[in-house]
Image 1 (cartoon, one colour):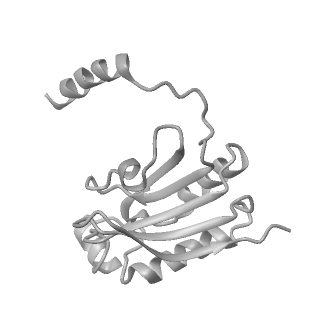
Image 2 (tube, one colour):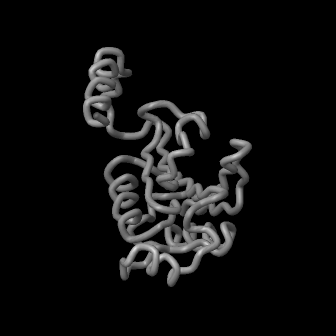
Length: 162
């Protein structure tokens, strides 16, 4: 039933969709955020199709796969600004790695969030210090409030061009 609904919705979308021909984001921007269904990334940040790459995962944390995606975004597709946006009432906030291991049975790192500001500072530092992400000049960390829709800037790094 759900698959049929998706295919039907796509049939309506395909005829009316905006046509963006360039894979390069026009605002040279990438956004790393959580997969949480309450976050409409484009609406929250006032973005339109074709303006930014959006990379989503559990918690909006910077891990090896995010670094891989940002390496391509920055070196191949011109991204020079990254926003890492976490959010209130996240499933990774207020739990421990051990609790997540018990809940899922998975022996992997979940990147639990004890404090959004600390986690964002860590994630911004991962991007800043990565030798693969030198084209990225501006990195900001935001916290999105799922109840009010407002974002708060937590941290920012700006590389001074040499």
